[in-house]
Image (cartoon, rainbow, N blue to C red; front, top):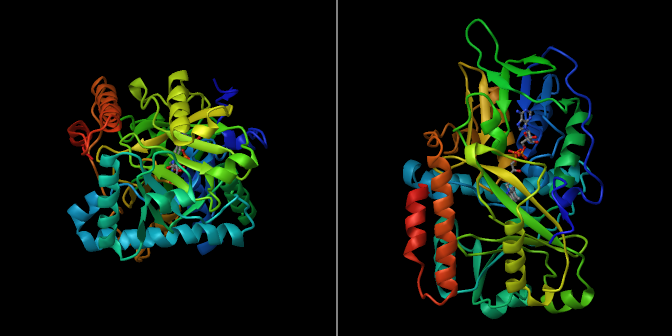
Length: 462
Ligand SMILES: Cc1cc2nc3c(=O)[nH]c(=O)nc-3n(C[C@H](O)[C@H](O)[C@H](O)COP(=O)(O)OP(=O)(O)OC[C@H]3O[C@@H](n4cnc5c(N)ncnc54)[C@H](O)[C@@H]3O)c2cc1C
């Protein structure tokens, strides 16, 4: 059904899957050890080294930088982050709004730094276009636009069906919204470019180096990252393993590894684009419960993603990005509904990746001073921009300076762990079955949001 399934992701198809660089040469002592070479780990190393070039920083990466979600995602560089509503309820609207403001700016920060550092990631700042294709979706879209006003006037525009389809001709569009805080990126180019930049700055990047355990420090010993190739001792050890975190000793129930899967079509001809529009290269999404996300790639394909089979028993994670046939079929069906003219287009690539979901669906960043351990993640699928903010926040925390960033509500936010199996598997599968059922009801003509979806939200603890 797809010419290639896996191969880490389509984003590596043109350049080939990278060979891991040199591994850890043996025991090592540094100032800061970062575990995981995705956006979180690399942005953290970047900002720390920029702030203090004398710091000795090592990044330990199990496979190669960009092996995880950072090299597989939908390329939505946008201002959404996991947990805003919960932060507003728990810490107050003002603090949630402060975080939103910083996230709005973070989109520009990523664009500016990539330009300044000479990283070409096919970035086009076309904003975020979201469409509603049923009445309940339209109701949710309007509520979303209204809700955004609490975070600043004019941040998101409500679009009529015509205004939305003038941008992108999605079949069945009833209305849309557009925000300028978004850009399309080629994810793997960004993460590989970042890896090059931090190496050039003098950060030691060790690939093919799996960390089995991160051990806390105490009054007598510094924290350590233990690998089969040696142990790295540092003043701070920072965990940046997101969806793979369950694989570390003692972290099985910290963040649930949720799958997200994508397909990419063959390049589509000029005639298709003449009808479809999409001249602005907006990143595209919808308001279904099991939502989709898409982009027009630099070489004129549609890359489209969605939840697919959501979670594997026992928090198992990954097999180099291959995904189930059923997931590919579901994504193909979405593509055909959105763009009937693409119904004969070949799916050239399908792949999947894992993202980290905390029990309360809120992202976190933290540095625990007594143990010397830090971490960031739990972005629930909105990590491309949030990882940049995490990197700058971990920098400030490690340097011990109080800044606007260290005062944001996700800093030090804690949550209970996930239930043991089989409850975890049953709960997540029930939740997604409910979201799909709610979508089916709404597509079949329900006028308002299905109560099944509200129930699923409750079960999920969102
Ligand atoms: C299919 C898909 C689509 C997505 N689309 C979007 C999107 O469009 N927009 C958006 O904002 N977010 C999206 N996301 C989420 C986003 O990609 C992630 O939140 C983000 O990339 C997380 O970056 P990270 O560095 O924290 O984790 P990762 O990129 O997963 O990096 C973690 C790294 O740690 C390494 N590692 C793991 N365990 C160990 C270990 N024990 N020892 C050493 N190294 C280890 C891994 O190999 C990996 O390279 C998507 C995710 C997926 C899977």
